[in-house]
Image 1 (cartoon, rainbow, N blue to C red):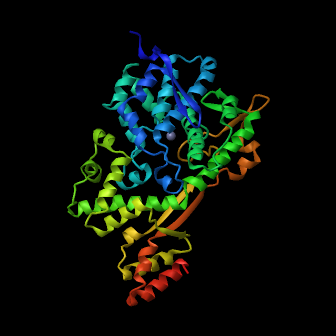
Image 2: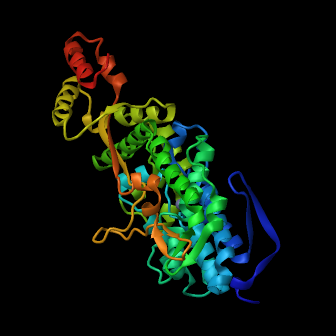
Length: 436
Ligand code: ZN
């Protein structure tokens, strides 16, 4: 039997996809990767974490997105194969890395990682190179193939061009998630003309460049990304649900360390809570497991854990106000004092959340991380960095925007108002938070 790199399916498999219409699979290797338990697990992990609490359509999974990134990559590779004289091995390296780039994501990734100090990129490496079905399939290509795929995802592979197709400022990952997240949230911001961008992309040494005639399509892409971050990804209501989610994990961990006995031991979560998690235990986790425990914990004896779970499951979120750390240092202190007077735990019911984004930047020497700029190929064949040609992009280049918000459980504060002895403190909090 020939090597899996050269095996094709008797009949091409076609997945119906609302964003790209169809996802085409004809390689045996890709088909086998999709059918591994580790890849199928991505069906049970939402692409946008708790965003569905704000935009109810955002129920799409990492599985959808990963297939989408694969499909965009398949189309890019088809275009560049001949000009780069690629072999089948390079082609499948690209496609496998695109398909598997997010395979290490855990349930509610960002909140989960913050509290339990895990890293989805490290888990992706572990899944690709460890004892998994994915690893077994990749090894059919060659013993070092899993390592090569892992290097592309980790951005350490020697072929910088391949890396740039998966992670740069214009890559298959971003193009898919912007279009997909816009589609599923129902917003208009994320749309841009991907077909046009793919048509004007040209390989150039270590990265892909864009033909000058495609500049406006790229401007539109950069603006889409900018708007999606502020309108969708950093939506204050979503962040409120993330704060609660983090507080639940934090409370469960604290209870465990204080010797609390859960009514029903959260067996599948114990390895993370005890900070002693191996690959098998990690792969057991998905969002249905987490939501199951939240449902169970609503009935726990600990009032804070039970209240936080009730909030998350029934969307009783924290309220928020704008917060300016440099000007409002005393506000925080005064609030903490008032909360303590009311007997409200500030570790769980008061929180500052900060989000920041840098929409686009050119390479600045001496900075951490190499940021590959987007280059335009000018009519004379020379390259020009995008912000030198586009006024719109120049306006947001290098501008990091940060937003801080103060989250609090307003309902618990107002409940205390009924009690005469707390009335004054509640009035003070209302003034501090500017609540009428
Ligand atoms: Zn991704």
